[in-house]
Amino acid sequence: MRFFRERRELLDTARRMSSAGLSHGTSGNLSTRVERGLLITATGMPYDEMGTEDMVELSFDGRAPLGQRLPSSEWRLHRDIYQRRADVNAIVHTHSRFCTTLACLRRPIPAVHYMIAVTGGSIVRCAPYATFGSEELSRATVETLGNDNACLMANHGMVAVGADLAAALKIASEVELLAEQYWRAIQVGEPRVLDEAEIAASDREVPELRPARANHTARARLNRNPFGDLQIEIIFACLFYRDCTQLARGGRQFKRGKPIRVRSKTQAC
Ligand SMILES: [Zn+2]
Image (cartoon, rainbow, N blue to C red; front, side, top):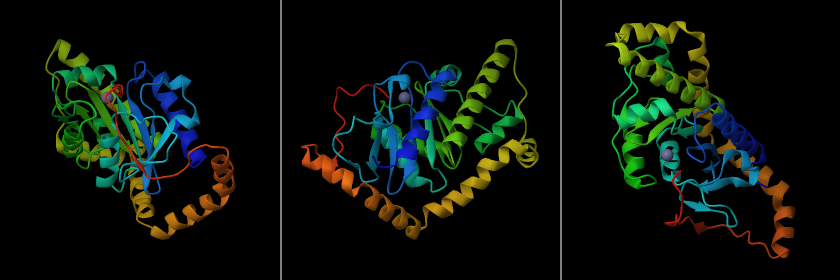
């Protein structure tokens, strides 16, 4: 199996997201960047029933090895973010309660707490509504996300990105907490919003905001290194040639190159 370590990490992060209460049932999805593509959680499966084989491999041109489950319906969104942002290596999409509540109001989260700096901006914007899984939704969300680390998705949920899965999940968790704090504050009054200077100061002074940013730069450099990708490709080719040959002899399909077709029966997220 290709990318076993990445599959294991993606599965562990999916289960942490679920146990943290950031997703309900089969909602939400996660992915991580691999060479020339991504691994993304399968559609319509509870996270505690998933195995490493349910992490679906896709290339950036929309192709996938045969014999896999269908990917999450939001695979276009994940692919398009990776193609737009070289600094992003992991994406977490959730329908978490408070983010989704504000997203249903199409209400962005202002800087009511300094921890908003973890998102890379001073506001968590809300992307316009479009049908789940559509190219239009992907386009609108990528545009709204811009260079930030998170945004809301109108009448849907939120998306968070990071240099690795741990960073993306941490940002998703922080944004959900911000959404809850903002929601609670507006129940009793009009919260005071911090100005840009305070957010910039927080970004400099809060140690826990720094690692993800430093990693962003380092990993972005790695993503642009074609020799690094080539070395990894050669190692995997050597390791898995024998296994693939044996499976092919046993009648299993292992031919690459079938375009992804998301069928109408695909479940939301
Ligand atoms: Zn969704």
